[in-house]
Length: 376
Image (tube, rainbow, N blue to C red; front, side):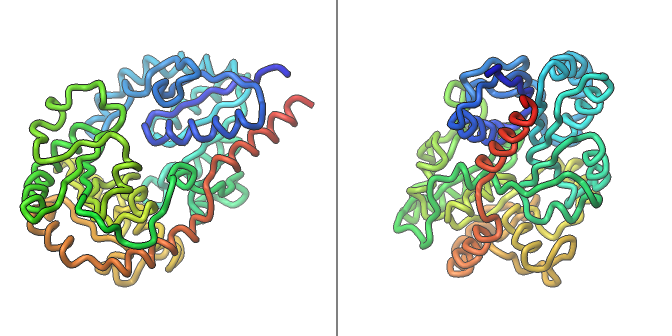
């Protein structure tokens, strides 16, 4: 059987982890394929990418402006690579991927275009739903409510949530442990914004007999940690998120996928988020949500429906959220001391039932069906 050619655009580290899980299932089905495009070869080591995704990663609105010249130089080269493939798979990063898809579509020969891990049109930029429905052949949603935000007859199917493929366990009761995790993010700006507060809190907890664990992304193992984190002597460092959290009784986590991850694992979590002042106020103007934590957002939609909202948003659904100036040592400490563990574990189970299953098997089956039709 002739190998199928798959172009991938996966910029974010989390997207690459989900890509690796998808390809693992695809290999189990013994379908020969080749891979090209943008992906992280440390996460997907058996294939050679055309561009390393790290050169396109930015944070915030100001960072995007700096990225534009680099993207314009690469866009047409990537489009030419994609048009020589059978399938083009786009994951997350819609500000990057939508213009790339539009460039690919200008070529009379285009691959079958699939978007997996859709942009958060339920939070902001709702017009992207119309755009994606027009330029993609298939949309693979990872949230049960996403279809409510797209035009009728959009080729969108819910495939499950990729984190449920990744997490190796889910705890049902609080751990008997003195270890507390701190996860300040994976971008330098995130880390530098949160770490001073996290350090002060870690010292306070250490004086009470706790062991603060700083969870560092695996990709940082070969980097100069002092340049990124500064003095980390108050912490015990750990480079494996799942192994570290399994030993912890609590976690203070930067906003993003990590809060959903710790929640699904069954680790009582507090979300903390600080951004550049300009970025924060731009986002606050554009985003119309009661919460920023994914677990809280998903549970809100599951309970009240999308696009409706919780009529009492002052009560977090599963974990507290502290933003900007509210991120301070004493505020986080008091939230930790008065945490509602019973509510957390009850709501975590509801979240698991709502998301239902992982997505790798469904996505691989979709690809296999397309390939069978292609090769008839």
